[in-house]
Length: 103
Image (cartoon, rainbow, N blue to C red):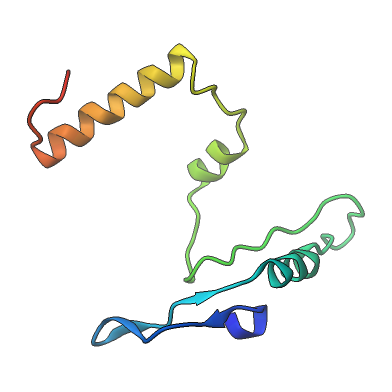
């Protein structure tokens, strides 16, 4: 499938026995062509494009993730961002039992 989309294999297979995969890349020209091919209008709607997900999978994307990706981004200089960042740092420190983390 990925070769058909314009991706090119490189290097040896990686992973573990039973879960090997081929690393692949796509060059700029291939990515531009893939984007053109991916811009298909939804049936019956001349303005709305269908979105394609080229993640390895099949994978499903949780509704909450879709909503978060469509929300207005927060500035990395805002207090809200820093609050979220510090909460994430605290959670990660707790989960990996890291020393020296501020609470």
